[in-house]
Amino acid sequence: MTSVSRKHDVFQAIADPTRRQVLQMLAEKDLPISKITAQFPVSRTAIVKHLQILTEAQLINGQKVGREKIYRLQTESFNELKQWLSYFDQFWDNKLSMLKYSVENNDENKEGNLKEAD
Image (cartoon, rainbow, N blue to C red; front, side, top):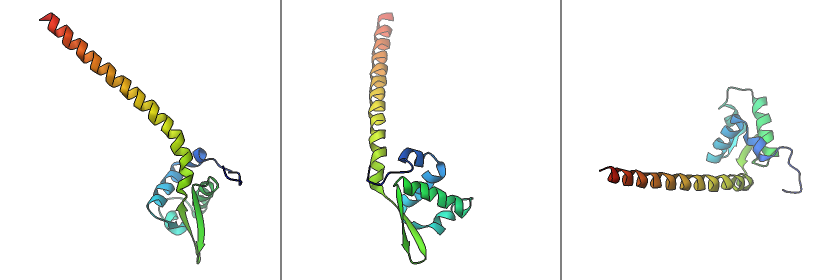
């Protein structure tokens, strides 16, 4: 973590579906708050709060350009998520391998039983 302490952690920040949708929008391109707000049926104030949480979690940052603030993803902050999720990728890969082995062995046993029945 950086010298500035995070008020919201990454996992707390992505827990909300609106914030996840904002992140998806910003993954496509940098956007001003007016374009972000236009995509949601909530007030600008509500969106500002969501953007603030994402900023405090260091997932996005906003930069003043003229009269507007343009938001963009901070992709390096997603490493924490990626590392955490990679554990579960390994977990599911292992479970799927075990399932495949089990299914293949069951198929072989069934074939052997069918041959014996003939």
